[in-house]
Image (cartoon, rainbow, N blue to C red):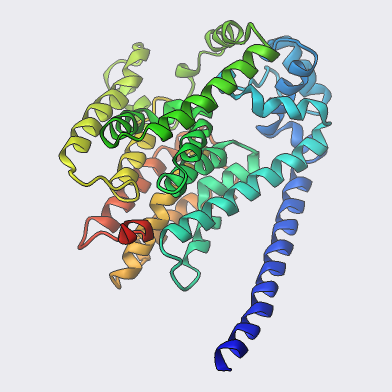
Length: 390
């Protein structure tokens, strides 16, 4: 009798929480859509995907500088140079649907996708942690890189969704886990050491379904890209030579490394990632029992820290490591103050509107790495629900 009464009481509570979550989602999307509507949408990163989609819809070059600039200015952009979609052509599937929308409607749909992706990712991380009581996982909604993605309309949250989905489905639905990694190819340079470990893990664990899922998604994307723009890869290469991304003021450790040795040698920006890839392979081989929600997250934070090209928006992908670290500290009864000390300056920079391509953000990726190392290397590491079950 008592159990049935308790269950009956919990149903209305669950429904109430669902309604509140739905209202918060609608409110958040509304605010984001208003902030990105009209001329504001044209001055956010979203406009690059919208303009590329417009070009694709008319079977034109999505990397055509004069046409992209014309579309962006007609939408209300104030840029003097074309603002290109710099993701590789296999990401064109993401831009194509938005070509059929005006910039305002596109901004609303884009905002909705970003918010839903963030909510889904945080919920999957919470479940991976064994659904711990409390609301610590809500800190993910205030993670500065994720907030910056929502503000400017960047795809870092899609990277987060792709990697988190891999973590969540790798044991129960390995094909889907592999296919989810396709989202990480929106910015493959952020995962260079991690990709080495992922391949080694698939071979050692005979994770053929993960490889099959990734290969299937990659093939489907490549065929779609060829179908909508057979010349995409050549056009993309020409655009990348034009913009010369490695000589931009990037807030990355790799650029600091290059500047410290010889700023004229652009290839030096890839050296930290190459060294980290060798370390990652060595580190993986030393681990007899590999845990993606422990050692894997360490490799993830290292990969993001040494990326040859990136911005704070791309760092949204390390959110699983941040929440894992917070839960580890809470389980050990330790203070969360170190995270507050790290996150507050980044949060202030984001809320103050500091540009993502300034050196004011060069410290953030090392900070996430340092926090994760601090939180998980003191005492026993936290084990996730699937590891305990295993």
